[in-house]
View 1 (spheres, rainbow, N blue to C red):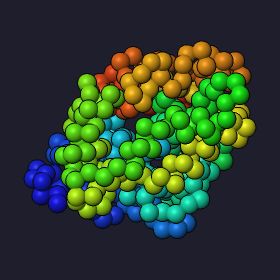
View 2: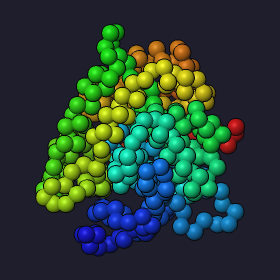
View 3: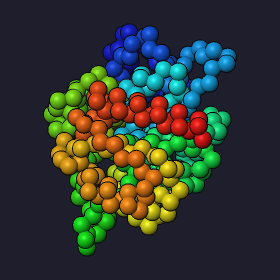
View 4: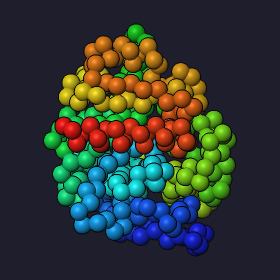
Length: 329
């Protein structure tokens, strides 16, 4: 099936990842994928890194953790903007090519899985970047293994969502993800149909790029004409409820390093304002945890913060700043 992309054949150590949009052959970082043993099976991990670094070069590692129905492919554009860095990005349990891994799910299990990835690759410490649910995994990982975290960077995620008084957190999480949940039950005759679905999505209608097409193509599994999104519905449900456990997150947040950057998208899943984290709720959160450095990124929504020019510029800058700060520590 990769013959659809005649100009590029990625290096692989973990099997067929499916069709992808061609990446420029002179990209500074090369890409490969591996499978890492974890309880219940193997976790797929994408790695971008310099092809032939000089012997004395220090190659910083960025552990990049995706959102609740995403995959490691959401980090492709950021990896292109970070030559000389190693980006290690797993498909979390129940997603991407790790979608057949069984439960239990939840933030602690994902944190254990990413620990296994760092151990397998013999990486002692990394800058940990989490987008959306990945931010919650990153905060949990930091609370369990602070010695493995050079710095944290949260990209529109990782902070408990604001809830109206008296609203059940699990019901609120289910309502928030209703449109996403509906997509997981859909089937598509081919990849072009799935692309058309996302081209019409409010989040991407004005921000369609080759990187988005790559991300969307990779998300499909199964066989034509009944292709379906890779994310396990059971995994999404379990993880959405786990993110609503305020007490556990508050305890984890007590260990978040001072100066941790939170990049806020002003628009949400459906390109709607004021986004998932309204400014007032973040101000309230900072009263309890002043270590959070909140920065709004204009011109993005919850998805495009990882794909369009404004979002990528902000994330790239925050990665570099966080790495510089971690070296000062």
